[in-house]
Length: 311
Image 1 (spheres, one colour):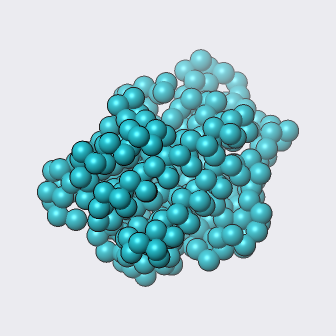
Image 2 (cartoon, rainbow, N blue to C red):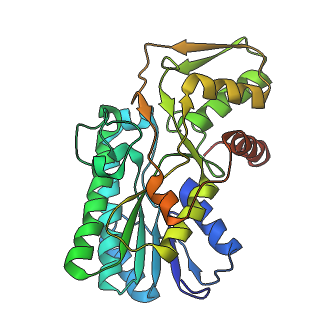
Image 3 (cartoon, one colour):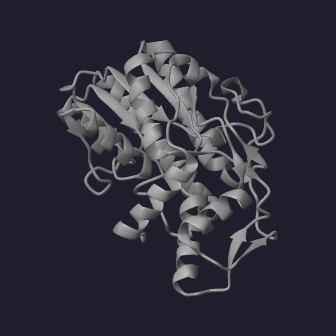
């Protein structure tokens, strides 16, 4: 990408998209295009068609998606598969038909089978059953991967697909009905600390292990790959280290300053037992994450305190 290339960041107001936009601006890219979902509903094929026809985009970061945690995935499975299939199909197809030079599709490590060997290698895709709690979302993301690969084979496009591990960072969603684990825990501990509560209740047993990547590190990886990578093979993005939810909970409790008790509700689902990605492919390409979990959690809590959290 040249500094004046016309670059469209789809989903620029979300966790991933906003990090990519910040990174592009920081690195001196000047011709950036972005629209809110109210300005451009990516589920609407005609609107997407008109947008690409008028704007003549050169590069696309497809970070727009309907996302959420276990609660949201359980309650709205149809929304997750339908909305994501429409968004992906409309943007990928319009990118082909209106001459986009390169597209980067943001997938997710939830595309890998629930009981796949750890760490998760890219070749484990489609080798087993998915985690039931987010299967509709995962199937939509798998369809996005296969759509990009099919366009590459049939039309010679340059679409690349990345599978980031669990993410957290600025512009995260702190709504307890739809948030992921880190923002949910930060909000719970913050409110408990503020209201002098005796304990915080956490879903599940605390035993499952998770890996967490700071969103600005993901953005840096995405720009790196957009400028250097052209293979049809998917690429994991992560840190290559994990910890238990119980250990994560203790870290967040300490950062927030909560002095009370942690109670795990084992009647609530744990999700996948472990989800650590194999990052040997992206390491071999020349990229590694640089933000430690402690540093990232502190940055996010500071952002939470400064900018508020209801979203």
